[in-house]
Image 1 (cartoon, helix red, strand yellow):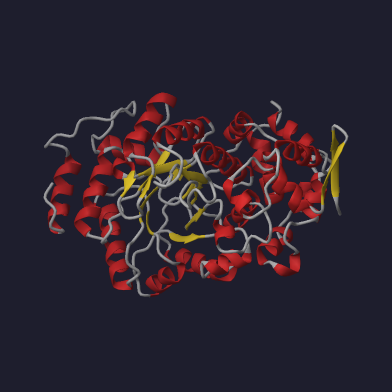
Image 2 (tube, helix red, strand yellow; image 1 turned 135 degrees about the vertical axis):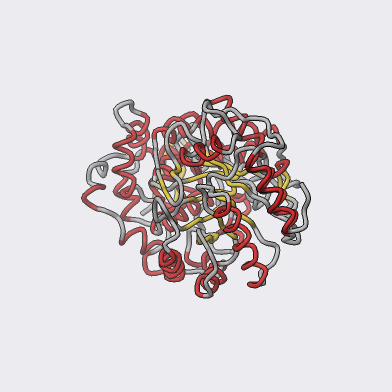
Length: 468
């Protein structure tokens, strides 16, 4: 089926749905790199007008990648709840935007309908929305998950404590963990990106993280962000592993480039569940995504990068994760050129993920060769907090010395908590109070030599050769 719209006597024609979606996207370098972006602002508006008149049913019946060519498409189609979708099937994309923004469409309604929202629907409606629209609707979406604490509650903001080190040095990692805990970071997860893929090194990292959590009875979870096959092997060898991590994308071919399939992810989830390490819930998966990953693997099938990203959330949704993280500016300026594009992409990703029922957080970040700076990240950070983001990253000094990119710091989380009145995950907050790190109002407290956590952590860090 082809599509067309006339503006000032000029007829704009689009051969298929994926072209309409691509041309309707806000300008971004990745779509131009792929040769699918709108050639002018007028063509972009023509595509958006076509999209606004498109029935939601057509987006469900015409997936952007054919059913028989892609297992992600098959997942989306086979899991789609027809009866639930029938409540909104009569709407056009434009009508759906208005319905989402309506005051009568509340958190309960959006939570109930989330399984009926396909990636194509979420991506399509986001292309018709201003930034403030994305923020307003995202704030109404609530996704709550549990492992050792409760994430996603209203009025709460969590932080992934990211203590990376370029050589996986236990002293450096221990120092970053201590630093983060004293600033109240770590309720989302204590997650290390390892420099090594040696299973013996990885096992030591898992044991170290588990020792910290168990010794100090911290109501949080740990993760070592290595390939899923290594995590399955680690589970089989008896390693104390909490969350299984994997980078995922929105097409079968892109996931294949990561060395994963839906079957492998299902196997990993079952392995993690078999350990029964969650105390409050069984959300055992942690996924990371990012606009541009499918194109960088030459696996986007001519689909724009934002729609591909939304399809990754369908993959994540299948496995009931504790956390999903869009690493929004990490892939580089080839895909998101500058601060303006990164900010828009972060808001889109957060909106699409939450609308689909995915517990989405954001690594508010950029690479040093992008046309972006920390002021751009401050802007996105603030907008995401207004939109009700589940969690952000906590990196010492906001400068990841292993991955060599710029992210957000422990201090950035303090800024958001102070500005928006946000608190930690409740179980983690109670622990921080017990450790005299915050007071009953959530305010950070000075650390003295009498602090019980400081004394215990000093002993722990000395055991790995680091003297606090």
